[in-house]
Length: 359
Image (tube, rainbow, N blue to C red; front, side, top):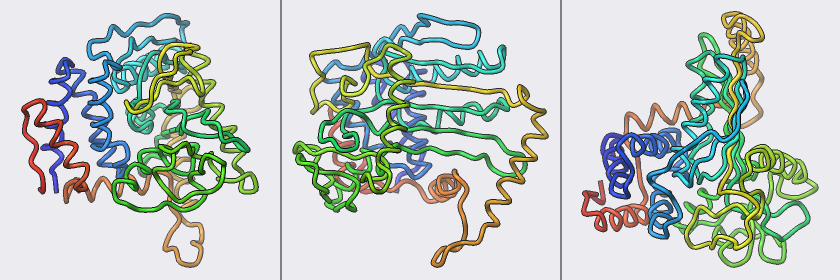
């Protein structure tokens, strides 16, 4: 098991060796560690290899000049200058919160960025300000719309964080596909199959192979099949694409630059880099925070009291599994499977920094 401190020091060192200043390296590190803590290893240490390979391919800018290129009192468009996504996204959410503080709500669409980690991290940034946080992002075009085999969309997650009073906050963080791409990668590393309804082959037939997208297959939208509502997942994914990319002037849909080096960037571009969308809403723009939080407590208690289905002990509130996982991981440490340890060791050797395998 690896301690949080050990992984923080290692990750920060990697990004500093890439050329990031210390502040940006710390910002990026927070996202990798947050993913591991919340039980989302698909966005944790496994992704460091992706960033290392993108850096080798000069597809990320480690010294960006992030700027606001358009704004009103409550909105803005941010240009990330090809930054590591965590850097551009953190600054963008901070701007959304600042605009909400002044105008009641703040909305920021970001272009010319890259993959940014877990969306829930950014929505949760609003909580300490008595605000509701919203975050969306486009991603690698590996997802086929309903009734298609063309890879047109990303996993395009949506995250919403809502503060409560005596209870922990409501935090919904989910992709608009049945599984995140990183979880497919983890399954592939482990040599596991995935349930049918997650991916399809090049002909559009269901597959249980997590590596099928490397052989012309694609992921499918939430619902899996039309009969199970994949058209609704398609709609959700399209909304994220429009808010994140069309609003900001980023590359939408199939033009989104892949966040893995083994997939080439399309020659045709319709915008700049990868796009995100952030929102912050002051609770006191609707009602006194203490009144709202009291009602959220009652909402949470109401749903917790729902009768569980057979075979289940309780009804979960969005955010429960991740919060419980964080307590466990802070106590016991982070388990990293051998293939990922090997990748991290190779990166450590390249930069002449420490990474001890088999902890």
